[in-house]
Image 1 (cartoon, rainbow, N blue to C red):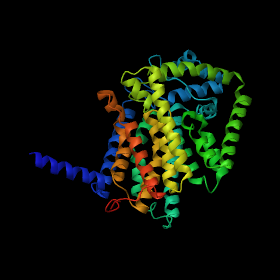
Image 2: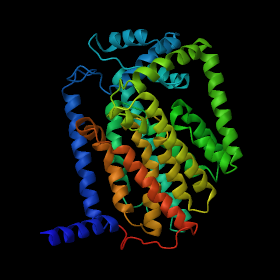
Image 3: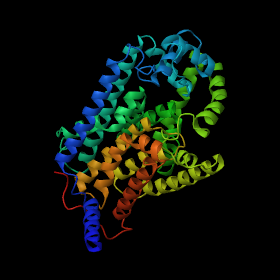
Length: 432
């Protein structure tokens, strides 16, 4: 029995190492299964709704309700009221009914421009326009990433994009459905991040503007300035700073200084109630901070652990981006680190992993996959589907460890590229 188990484990580990189990047909079947199951789930929610709220009394698109409610305050000329939680809740109840749950508004004032535009439409139409438009931006970003890696690898530019499998995988990415279910903005964040990375060397000013626009979710921009400064990309750095300054001035002119006072006053409540006390639910927050809190650690310990990981990621990124490693590894590294470095990243924000997955998959197809890389990449793609449920039922986090594993693998690959590692083993075959 011991010999049998030993042989079985050896075969199993070798299969994971090579990634040979990840055939094209299995990829297609799993992607179609996720797509079909998600479509059925959405159809059920819509069919059992009253057109505004689902069968559980929640607004369709749940978190989008706070965007829409805030937008109505913009139209009323009372933008600062969105940051007043009791006032925001009263507006949500007025729109969706007295039994609707509270969905807080936590964004900087920049996002009020979009909220106001969406509030000009009926709620269901606004939700459809928001998700549909940003989904197209997201798909365009993935397409652009694949073409850029093909071109850099001296492949015909349509080598990867002419294969419809990329589109299936991009649409069926489980984080896509988590984002749609919450009516959230993950598509926009991913599109801005990925497109900025693609254009960074060719059009640094445009890349800087796109990075600057990510200020509407500032927790994901912590490491961007560090990378731009460390690599001397001053045009992109200045463009990003000017973009943030222009957005700030625009909000001051449009809404007045009271909107910024209201925003800063609300951040304490957001930090304490949502982040530190886990009002959103530890299982939803995919960060080192939430893992420590979920396991019973105190707030100081959670911040210390999060800070230590963030500093390590920052140091690794500086080395990676200043090295001679191939650009897709650098881009993927920043995409992953941007998510792990913040204490406040929810599972619908995992859409921002899409640029990293696209860069790494395209790089592997062009240059071969290393040990465990195909398996880790497949697990990273699948993880958003089950991360929340597994954490809620078992207190076992999947998101952070898996993101750190993929980051470690790409760092290993980068070390090989620059000659720090002389032994490198690629998988036997690309995905067929």
